Length: 459
Image (cartoon, rainbow, N blue to C red):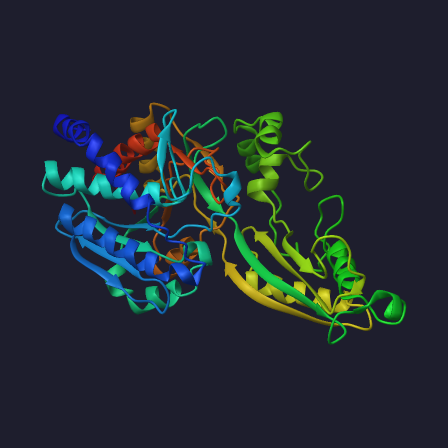
């Protein structure tokens, strides 16, 4: 990091924080149609910021859903090209009563920025915007060629992004993709993510009588959809944490000794995680450690469950219908579409007489694996060490980022997962926060990565 760039970051600190606040105030919740205008307003805000810094060919591009923001700077002759990805949309904010402050009124407390999107992913997008500003203000150029791609539907499964990538393949050509939508290990230990799990999200609908009926007059004569759904869900996964769907594990590659050694090397405190989540004890698939379950094994979870009477006091009915949302986190070689068909077939097999059962696919994401030996990953590791003063550990992420595999498959470029969120950021939950030193050092890590990559042979 050059002295003039550090001086610029010091001089612009107050302005930078105010800009961060401004971005977080826009309620860009992609999953709620009422906020479509806010998503477009956020896209326009990001585009204006890129233009003000000197990024070229900035475009707010329609997708059929919320827009994509694109921009580039392509004047580093002979240097590699980096495609930078982030997302400006955020998750819904309920339950509101658990927030210390309103989620779109950001505030700083104890060295953290609080607000929806502070870490996931507006804070990390903003770090990239400020790195762009600092580089162009102090050097007038980047050390590498850079293309920016900021989307507005990641928190809704990126349903329109793949088509947009296919239609814009030529202007997205890059040697490396850099995604800043991941975080550090427990204790805020710097980390580079090497893999992401995929996802399959489905809804199970069970219907019986045409309307709710009296449980006294019809109980024992009519199948109860809520009972039927409970039986189905109970059969999907055993108490040992093993998923019972036939063929679910067919493509799963067993963890090697090297894999297990890597998981064992990560800092992990089971008691601290239990306390952080508020559970009496941790649980999961038998035979595997918690880090292995979170990053190296597939899962099945019920994400939502509803049906029947839920009001005050009593109402003795057999409900007409019951529903559940179910997701599976998937590991390398598992195809979400194949897993959906296996889930669907098993659910229909389990369905008792007297009800109709449907299974609908809602969302998919393919898993991603990257080698620690990849030259661009090594460059990212050096950049994080320079910025944070500690060599990062390698981790496997438990979550999913749909664009990661999309970019890998469409661009045939290695994907570097270099994110800066603290492990206790409360992403997707009330009181989301980003440690400001992570945000600030993240800006520096981005600059270091560009500088390092300019002289790193990628072949």
